[in-house]
Length: 400
Image (cartoon, rainbow, N blue to C red; front, side, top):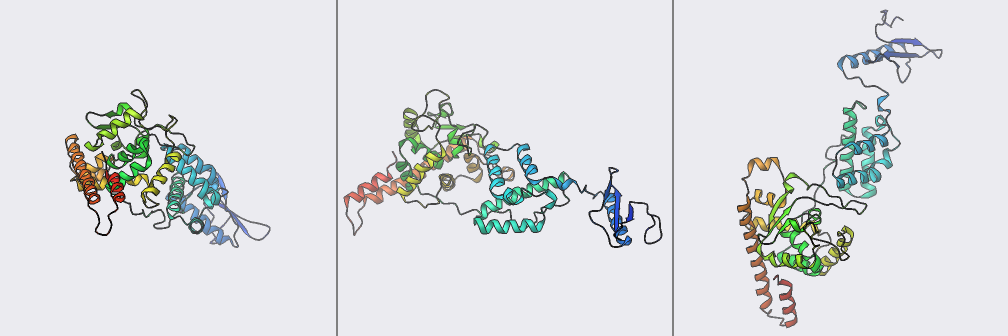
């Protein structure tokens, strides 16, 4: 058929329908003839549309219009399944899908999720849940899924284009004093007090503490080797895996004031045998996050710590005290099992000898703080001379 300019069309075809409107068809790169998704009022409009499609094919920008018909639910679930994710990350992604994404996008095809839809979804989530942190995590997951869809040529452009929507503003980390750490260890009970001290002065992550065995402990050298982590999944089961990063596999040299705590725990609570767990519950099973969480919250209330103070915040206490004891940033990174390529290029090497010095400095800092608490408790206040208050203050500060 001739086009509106009197030339015979070389790309695609146009035909007039009984309704008087015009239909356009064109061959895709795969040779399949594809009709336009709508009809045109004039042959010239149809001809212009075909010219645009021809240009897309020549530039390599053409996308199969049927490709985006893949359902979001199927694609997103397969996306999570195909990635080599740590167990807790996989649990988080599935939680975000179920709670935040599928409720809005489960019935949509990939090409039906547009930028306006994403903005509306985010606004609704912020209003309904009030949680900027989880909404930001869900947005990042959605953006990653849709970016893969772009790479798979299922959609032409990622609809997640809200600047700053995936950023989280971390809450200011709280720091416990030496006296507060001692008080938390006292309040949580003998079975778990070493865990508090290792969380603060190790400083070790909860999943690393769950994976410790007797063979990881060298009491004479006051050294604990962190080899693996055993995070607890949402189903309550622990799964054995690698530490958070390569730097997480490390030897931690403990300050000398923890020798008695470590010896007492090994004798009283750790499972027997080289592979015996260092921390187990009252019934001899690996400790559960929910059970320990109740004990932690109760201890936190007894001591009067802020409600938002987490067990994980003890690590920040250890970082701060180590720095005050003269540790460099690299020393602290090695001790805490943190990795950073940029820091590795900038900061000096921290070997076992340096870690011995850091542990000694940490020991001196804690002992000094405890001594100050004891001395303050031993001197009666000018207005109060209650001996009972003095005795309780001394007990609170006693570490050995």
